[in-house]
Image 1: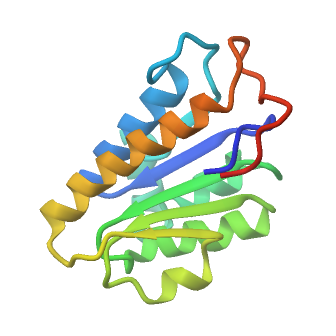
Image 2: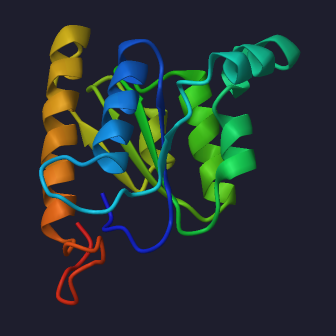
Amino acid sequence: MPTHRGGSYLVFGNGGSAAEANHLVTELTGHFRANRPSLPAISLSSNDSLITAIANDYSYDDVFSHQIGAFCRPGDVVIGLTTSGNSENVLRALKEARNHDARTIVLTGNRAVAIHELADVVIAVPSSYTPRIQEAHLFVIHVLCDMLESRLDAQGRVHPAATEI
């Protein structure tokens, strides 16, 4: 996960991955371990009214890409979580994020094929068993938050010597 340099984090997933997306946003916007200012992060999985409107008016495959189109700016970090790596709505969202010059990160399992071409960073759990993938994703989320916070000072600014993860 890149160190925060002024952009926002847009995070999403389906089902259990949506819950993990919400958890990551909570750690970024609240705090994980350190007492620091909130980082701007939004879960694209949590607005039921918006998700069902997009699904009804367009397609469920578009529920994240439409939100990326509305909220994403150059320099943002877009993080998708998908145990299979083949969820069409996640793939479309990553494509849309690329159109907005955002950095893209995916947490997935070992069945992902097409997703490798759409993400700057792919963290693939070497399993096809959904419960183990989700457990590993939570661990990875905590490691990423710990790494990110270690690069921020008490005011939430990146340490001068910090580099991207």
